[in-house]
Amino acid sequence: MIITRTPFRISFFGGGTDFPDYYQRAENGGAVLSTTIDKYVYITCRKLMPYWSYKHQFQYGSAREEVNEIDEIRHPSIRETMRFFNLNYGLDMHYNTDIPARSGMGSSSAFTVGLLNALYGLNGRMANKRKLAVDAIHIERDMIGEVVGVQDQIAASFGGLNHVTFGKNGFFVHPVTITKERKKELESHLVLIFSGFQRFATDIEKEKVSNFAKKENSLRQMSEMVNDALEILTSDEDILNFGRLLNKAWELKKSLSDKVSTSSLDKLYERGLENGAVGGKILGAGGGGFMLFFCAPEKRAGLLESLKDYLNIPFNFEENGSQVVYYREE
Image (cartoon, rainbow, N blue to C red; front, side, top):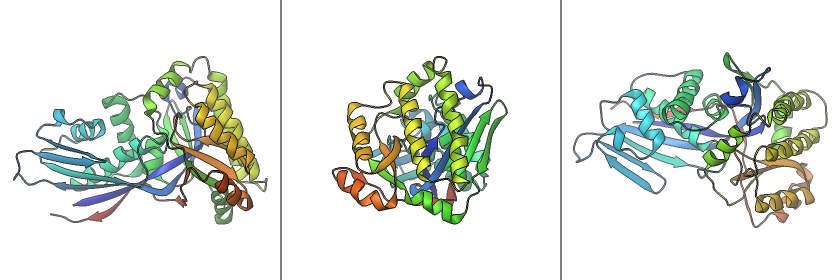
């Protein structure tokens, strides 16, 4: 039996520039600034003995699948990840999560990375962080055919606060080297609120990708903001400027597609700004999920009081990425 733990991520700047459709054409490629947090996907796998009328068993959310052939599997990531390994034994897999799916925190990619890590381990192998990311990107983009960027798979695999760059030669992960005190200062200014709306990101991302040629200037500005954010973090500049920059990035993100935000999300965001936040953004593709606000710690209580009809999710940064947390040879 093996259990993997894979973190969710918060993307601050550059989302959208991690699509190959953009960064392989752009002169300076793409870039994102993101961190993983201590909210996780847990995947338990073990070989299933041939006692039953089915060969494979999967439990995820409220769903349960019992199948004999890989082609029968409904869950696309499970199906294609098993095809990737060409398993010749029965598999029993259970999935648990700290945060619901379709909420903008990279849950789909965290699932794929965690399952890859588990199946490598079950087969007596250890995959390094880069291999986990590369394999997850291949499974999601090439095998499943999803319209997704590549930052989520990288964040889930590597973990930590990272500046990730993308270009014709692939991706490069640059850990952000700031003091422990500065990192805690950044963390203390963040408030994560669940909007209550879950959504499928694919339709939103398809529209964004179709608009890339028309929105190239906006995407270039979003990529350049990564360097602006890094300059704030790595200097003595007022940390609140990071939040003000988030506000500018949110306005640019909304310009990529009219599906990124909704009237309800706009009202939630405006309420946050009226009650202490200096900036923020919806996480992920948009349309729902989690809203991140940036506010001074002394204004946090007032902000949360104004948003008391929404769910606040306390969190801390994490550094480890996807890990095997339990292994027992059977």
